[in-house]
Structures are given as C-alpha cells and as structure tokens.
Image (cartoon, rainbow, N blue to C red; front, side, top):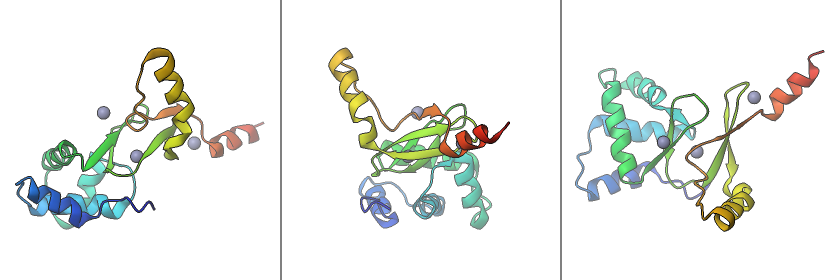
Length: 149
Ligand SMILES: [Zn+2]
Ligand SMILES: [Zn+2]
Ligand SMILES: [Zn+2]
C-alpha cells in the first residue's frame, strides 16, 4: 500500500489542531478507515463502528465523515448507482467500476493522463480523476461472459 497513506494518529492530530473534539465515535470512524484500506460506504463504516460501539448512530457517522472531508482528511467517490464510498485522503488514484459485478477498482492516476491532457487542451476542462468512477466491465466478468455459450 502507498506510503503516503495517512495514519490514524495523524488524522486525529489534524482534528485536534483544528480544535475539533475527539470523541469515541470519531476515534472509531478513523480506526475503521485506517484498518479497512478499502472503499467503504457510510453504511459499511457504521456497521464496522457498531461492532464495538453499538450506540453510535448512522447520522453521527455521516457527520464525522463530513467533518473529516471538510478538513481534506477523507475523500469520497461515486461508482455507478451505488452509494458513495469513503477512504482516507492521500492516495492518488482513479476509479473504474464494473457494471456486472459492481466491484470498484483503483487504477493509477496516470492512466488518465492522456484524457486529462486532451480535455484540458481542447475544452479547458480540468478532470477530477478520483471523484466519480468510470463504468465498464471488469476482466473477470468479460471472461465469464465469453464462456457463456
Ligand atoms: Zn460526490
Ligand atoms: Zn465485474
Ligand atoms: Zn479511491
């Protein structure tokens, strides 16, 4: 995993520097994001947090995710029609999502270099590589489809 991942302590330090209160729920949400290394929906984050702290409500988790996002500690992205997914900021990558199995994959940011350059040069448009996933069909699903007679 990339070394530019922010560790949980750094996240909590940043919260403190911004005079945010460090609640048990916040600590739990940050812990889940640090441990998971994955793209989690707010619902999945809530479920993980509730394993240890069943009293933490989904709306509390939402508010915490928003607060972390406001401080650029967390980013979210969208894949197809599914709920937004969250992870710690600092990993520079794009997303592609499979419309058959609904799995979202990370792809290196430079995969989008050519398109980003072209969009900027021709349309003055600045591409956000991370926010929204490109849709398609993954390698495994394509193989499966070819196998169907
Ligand atoms: Zn969004
Ligand atoms: Zn697939
Ligand atoms: Zn991502």
